[in-house]
Picture 1: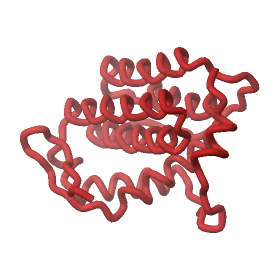
Picture 2: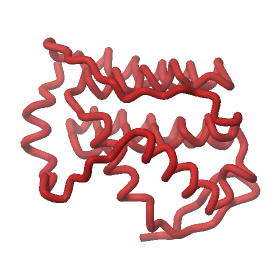
Picture 3: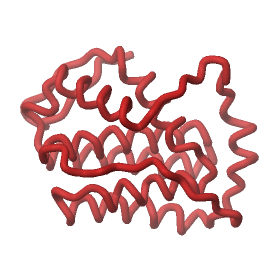
Picture 4: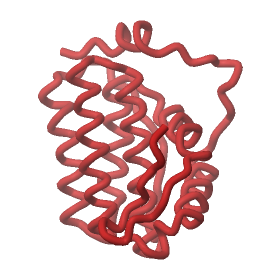
Length: 178
């Protein structure tokens, strides 16, 4: 069983004063503009972004294994960025929502890992409709006691000034070493 409340207190110290009232609409707009500026939308491929989603899912799993609340939040936000990119590559058809539901019971680690695997599997096999994967990601955030929009805000703050280049071979954005 994952004790997410303990992990939040131990691993993440967000300065609530700096927290902005970030909306899903603004996040989506920011991500699409950021991705367009870096040629991801114009030159990227669904397969390239699905591979990026796999990478972000694996990083989120590592956060679960290490019981690192900060890594889990980072992974959720990064997965949201990739799902928005996937949708943009298909013409931005998906009506995403950030509505979360409260769960009273703790989640087993095996179930959490399976949920992450499902997000990736569904995205790979229901191309052009990423709502199911998105909704599972939002639900996963609730299940591990994470504010989904806080994850999105953290992801945006991490990538907004990122420099790098678009790689034609992998069809993905490669960030500069930090």
